[in-house]
Length: 296
Image (cartoon, rainbow, N blue to C red; front, side, top):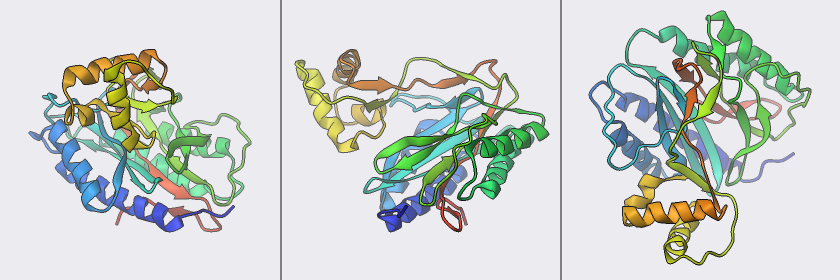
């Protein structure tokens, strides 16, 4: 299988890697989560890309899908902060993540997800099975005394599609599906000192379009017109309230959700309120596996 627009995939990966490193440097005690998120998104644009999804900085027991609103007051103190960055270049996506331990007490938890990612990449090749990759992730995380989050996973990537097939598990599911030449995948281990599962909290500030159909409400129509710019990729409330009246945005989102046009993605919280670390790279499966989001 030949990858189309390979240079755009490489460019997206490179911008994602650079933006992630930039963001890591901003996550410091006393800095604002909202301001850091905004600065990283501006960095992505300055480097020639667009966000493939809103920057997510999920702290402590929140594993994923946390996007601040415009009035967010969270300041960095002693959190375990997972930074997830996505970049798109004409629909080609680079997806990458790392975790920063601001407390200085949870370095092993951070290392568990990082080493699991390295171990998974080592066994990734044409013909490797999804179960084999999951086994490497689980065994590596367990060797540090932690658990993988089993109901979170890596995923395939396609143009304007962040979560394509296949699903890359974080434990051995026994799945014998083999990787094929030309596949683009994101491997994404999550490690926790909790139960190893997440649930959806509320409310969601992260959304994407799942259906296209006409709506009657003027608020919903106005909002839907604004959403065309995102090409069905995820967006966050903060992006909309920066351009439109906040009350109209809330009403429009509610109506589009009720019409089954949008799907919300609430923050994902560890079941036992365990701490969570995350690491992620985007890979091209080829005769030689290429890590598209490799950091210098």
